[in-house]
Length: 190
Image (cartoon, rainbow, N blue to C red; front, side):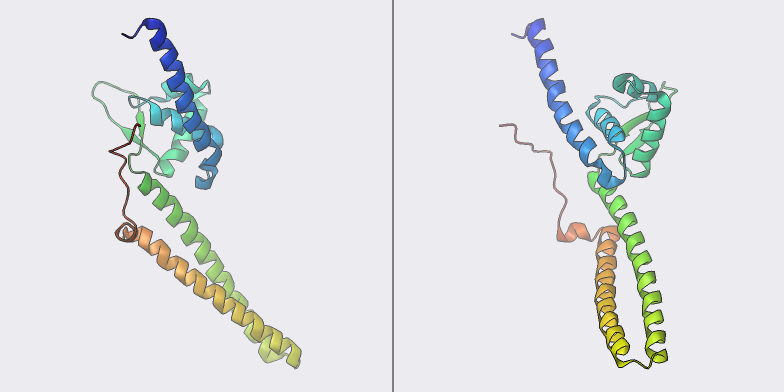
């Protein structure tokens, strides 16, 4: 039989367990280019039994509604939360995105595609500058150094071409044919 005191103690233990996960999320959410305070917001919405309003988030975390709005926008842009609708509720409601793979994929695709494009552009410009130098210089030593550097740039270029192929696997969803998504539906509670 569960007494009121036991339930209260158990609730404290539950909150402590939840906070353990929320703290870790907050520490590592920078990988998504999101601040730790917004990571705590994510954890709060994640463990909420129901979709939350900005007011509820603000009250729960002791932060301003403006901070909650900014945080929810960042989480929404990373596809980590979504706005939901409930009949009779006039305020915006938010819940965490159920598909963690989607949010990871979107952040991964965005960051790595951008990095690859910028670096490929730099490689192209650098190669052109070096080829011009090669043709203009009379120094065999400089020409040898240019050839050596061009080889390094070709290796970097091959890497970024490979990276673009990896990004395309995420973009098309083919990555999940290679490494299938895991389901947590059958969680072992032992």
